[in-house]
Each structure stands twice: as C-alpha cells, then as structure tokens.
Image (tube, helix red, strand yellow):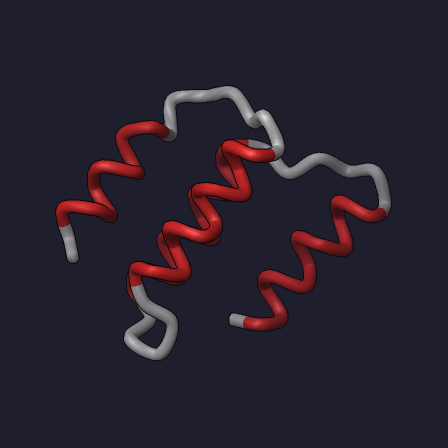
Length: 68
C-alpha cells in the first residue's frame, strides 16, 4: 500500500495530476485491505477533495462511511 501512495505522490510531484479514477482505485485498495482499512481510504478521499479533483466520486465517501 505504501508503494501505491508513493506512486500517487510521485505523479503529483512530476506535475501529473491524479484523476478521480486514480483516487477511487486507491480508496478501493485501502478499503479492501484489512491491514490498511477504511480510515486510510477516507484520508485519500479528503486528499482528493483538497486537490480539487472534480468528479462523481462523492458517492464513494458515503460508501466508505457506511462501511464503518
């Protein structure tokens, strides 16, 4: 999981903005990995919002919140 998050950071530092799909894929990995968990998925969601990524991923927020 750390390598996935490092890759997203590397993309950002290289000037490649992650898309909604990128963030959502990372959130799913977090959500489905018992060693990572929903809380980390929420951190990724909040990073997506903080980076002003537009899209329809808002439903993901509710999906993850309801899974707690």
